[in-house]
Image 1 (cartoon, one colour):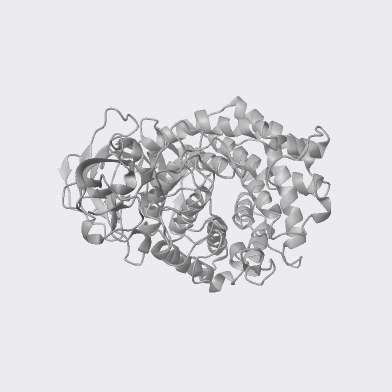
Image 2: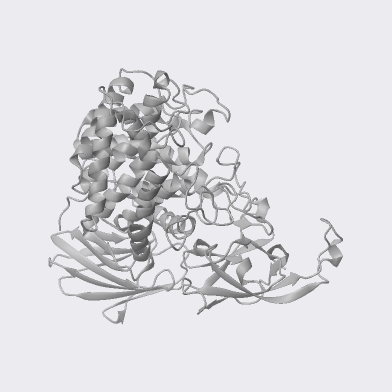
Length: 636
C-alpha cells in the first residue's frame, strides 16, 4: 500500500488528533453499493457536466479575457473563478481512481491558462484583473478574492496528491506567497467576508511544510471579530466578524461561511496544538447540532441572508438548507472526528451525506438543488434557487454542483481511519480498504446493501500475527445489533459508539454485523414550533418523505394526516427501481376542506377518509415529476 495519494484532509504527524485518514488509493467503493454508485455517477455524469458548463457559461472565457485571448464581456458572478477551481479539484481526486487522459488534459491546459493569467506578483482573479483592477483587495467584505484563492489552493493540493499538474501547484503557491506577504504576520489586517482561505492554507502547509502558510491561516482566525468588515447589509455576523472565534458560543450568520470557518478553526487548532480553539469548535458544534440543524443534517433556516435563525427556528417549508452548507458540515464533522475520535461526528457525517447531500443531486447526476426544503407546498410552480420544485442543471450562482463533484470524487477517503490500536470503520459502503495496523497491514472487504439493509459482512485479513483492534461504528439510530465472528455469535458493547474486536487476523476472518433497522417515527423538540404535532418517518440513516406522485389523483398533500397507531412497514416497490425500500403507512385525508383558511375545530375530523401512504427516501424526491413533498407529517 502506498501513502502517496493522501486525501483532502491530511494532518501532519505532529498534529493533535486521535485518528489518521487512509490514503485514497487504499480504499475502493464498488459500484454495486449506494456510495460506489454515487461515485460512478459523479465520474460519468457530474464531473463532465461541470466541465461542459465552465465553457458554456463563459467561466473559462473570463480567464482568457485576462490573457487577451478573448474580448467577450465578463460572464457571471464576480467570484466565478472558484467554480473552475472546484471542478479542477474534483478532476484531481477522480484521477486517483485511475488515469483519465481527458481529466489530466483539463488540469494541464487549465493550469497553463491560469499561469498566463497570473499577474507578475502572483495575484490571480479574472474579475478584479479585468473589470475593477482599482478595487483589488479593497472590498474584502464582498470581493471573495481570498475565497477564490482558497479553492485554487485546494485544487492544487488535490492535483499534487493525485500526481497531476505540477504547474497548478506552482500557480497556487505564487498566489499563496503573495497572500502571506500582504496579510500574514506583520502584514495588513484583513479577512475575507467569505471564510475558506483558512482551511486551504493549512492544507497547503501540510502539503509543503512551509510554516508561513499555517501562521497566516491562524492570523486570519485571530483577526475575526475585530469589525474589519463592517456591518454591511446583513450585519457583522453574516461575515463571521461579530465575535472573536475563541469567544463564540453560538453558530450565527451565513451558514456556509460559518461552517467553512469552523473547519478552518479545527485545522489550525490541531496543527498548532491550540486546545482553546478546538474547545471553541466543540461549543459551536453543540450550538449547531442541538438547536439549529434540520433532521436531514441541513443547516440554515433563513432565506434573506442564507443564515442560521434563532435556536429551534427550523421551519420545513422555509428551510434554506443550502447544499454547500451540507457539504461544509460534512467537512467540519470529518475534522472533528479526526481530532477527537468521538463517534457523534461520524454519526453526523452519515446523516448529512445520506439525506441533505444525497438529495442535492438528481438520479442522472446532471441537475441539482441549491436550497433543500423539507416541505414543498402544493401549488408551487416552477423552480429557482430559493424554492425548488425540481433540480436545475446550473445556477446563476453555481457554487453547489462543482462542490458536490469534488466531495463525491473523494468520498471513499472518508470511510475509515487508522489509530494506534488498529482500524476504525465509520461509514459503511461496499468495497475494499487497506490500512496500516500494529505490526503490518490489514485488508477489509465489505459486502452490504446498506443503507437499505443493516447486514454488513466484512472479511478481514492481516499480514501480522500481532493482535489489533477493528472498531465498527454503531450508529446512534441503532437500538439493537448482533455480531458474528466466523459464524459464532459474540458478545459486544458499543458504549462509546464503536464495537471493538481485538484479535489476531492473520487468517481470513468473516464478521457479520447486523444493525437492527426498523422504521421509526421521529418527533421534534417541542420548541420547534413549525412542526409541532407532526412526525417524520425514518429507517436506518435515511429520512423519508411523502411525495405528491404517490398520492391518489385529487389528493392534496397538505390535507393528509398520518395514523401513528398503525405500524409503518418497509416495502419493496417494483415500479421504483431507485428505491429498494419504501415505507408503507396508514393515514387519513380530508376530502372536503373549506377553501376558507379557518374553521371550527370540532368539525375538522368529520370529513376524514382512510388512506394508504407510501414514503420514499428524501434524497430521491423530485426524481419522477415535479410536485409537492413533505418530511414532517401531521398526526391525525
